[in-house]
Amino acid sequence: MLALFFTECNMCHRCSLYCPFGLDIAFLIGQVRRICFLLGIVPYILLDYVYSLSATLT
Ligand code: SF4
Image (cartoon, rainbow, N blue to C red; front, top):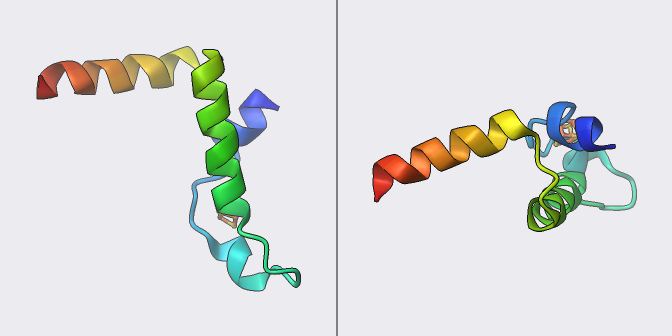
């Protein structure tokens, strides 16, 4: 599931335009990513990238 949520969606929101129920799938995937981040189960390479960016901004 982790690989699915972090590698199979690029947050383009295209599916939201076509969902017959009006679901915003990209929003839901974003929420799952936030929950995974809070649980500390984000892919290491992504964490490393974010921390290296935040270190350059401070
Ligand atoms: S936002 Fe929807 S259409 Fe776009 S990549 Fe993610 S799941 Fe696919």
